Length: 109
Image 1 (cartoon, rainbow, N blue to C red):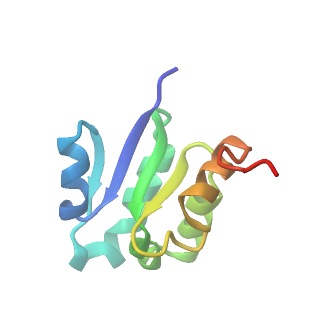
Image 2 (image 1 turned 90 degrees about the vertical axis):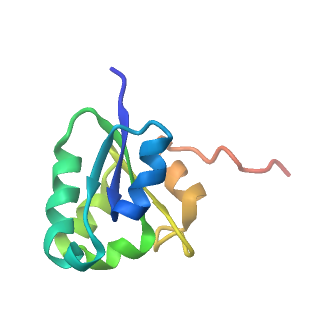
C-alpha cells in the first residue's frame, strides 16, 4: 500500500509543499492554531493513507499535551518537523532513525 505525505500548518507553510505535489494538507492560520491545530493533527493521524506528517517545529508548542505526545510517539504515520531547532526529538536524523529503526548515516570506525 502506497502512503502519502501530509502537511499540517499555516497556509504559508503548506503552500510550498502543495506546489511540490503534496495533496494532503491541513491549513491552520497562525491566529487559530491554539483552537484548531489539535483537531487537524488528529485527523491526519487517523488517515490510514498518511505515512509521513510534516509540521513546523514551532507548531508543536500549540498542541495539547496529549496530542503532542501522540504525534511524537507515532511510528506510522511518522512525524517530521522542519524549522530552526528540529524540535525536541533531535532533528531529522533521529526522526528517520525512529521511523525505520536504523541509523542510515552512522559512520563505521
